[in-house]
Amino acid sequence: MTTVHTRRRALHPLVTGLLVALAASIVCGVALGPVPIPFPRVLTFLQAATTGGTIPATDAGQYHIVWDIRLPRVLLAAVVGAGLSVVGVAIQAMVRNALADPYVLGISSGASVGATAVATLGLFASLGVYALSVAAFLSALAATALVYLAARTRGGLTPLRLVLTGTAMAYGFSALAMLLVFQAPHGEAARAAMFWLLGSLGGVTWGSLPVAAAVTVAGTGYLLANARRLNGLSMGDETATTLGIDVTRTRRHLFVVTAAMTGVLVAVSGAVGFVGLMLPHLVRMVVGADHRRVLVVAPLAGASFLIWVDVAARLLAAPEELPLGVITAALGVPCFVFLMRRRGYVFGGK
Image 1 (cartoon, one colour):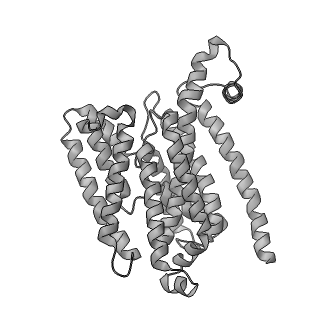
Image 2 (image 1 turned 135 degrees about the vertical axis):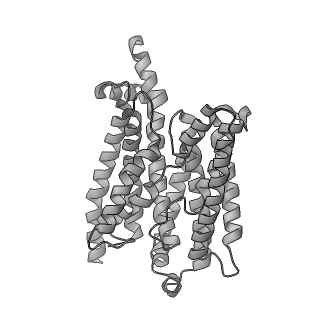
């Protein structure tokens, strides 16, 4: 009992520090960009917007940039980073595979088919700015159903069948998306599709935030409530069964929750790679393999991480933007190699 309380107390400073870092990252993410805005002015604008205050007419342009353009984008980056990190933690435990990430189930590749169809063929044009997100989410749901039907057996969902089925389906969906890109009637449509496939938060509005935030919070809460079951699954089905865990039912529920979270997040941000693969491992290096701790720290770390990735995407090639996946891959590959070379670390825990 003393050890448990000691560990909880040891986690509190880390969580507090990450919360402070997240708040600072949000302010910096709003202030930094092709048109930099001083930090005191950003805080003034945010205070005025949240308390109903007024600002001088001469500051209306900067206020519009802060409140209507950058703040929803930064908050969505935090939500997506947190959600992908949490989903990565859950999927790695669910399939007992250290290389698993939110896209191993083929959901992201399925969403790319719908998004690419919108960009290249103009489907759902009547939905305006929401056409791409709606199409991506609907095709992600279709991909989820296909993967589930193909992977399930009379004995339930097994880790190996899930990974193999998801990987195979992902290749098929990616091939279809690439076919749509190459058949695009003009180059700009193909470029837009490829940009989305690598992840982007450009054009985000306040309307993109509520559903993604609600799904991420609800999904994270569910996974935290089932952290003990995730601990059991990560040790193997036999061990989990001896601990009183219904492995088949638990894995089925986890599949639905993680697929829903992935579909919603991909629909609003595109396929941002490496976040759900690397953040869980980095967090485990710090707090250990207990999912009751990992699922508290991972979303905070993932949120701050993706905010700074988005800042880099806006600044490195200003006034153009880089896809988020380019930045995450540039950071993720060296980090991945470092983890493999690091003595004393085994994927999945210390």
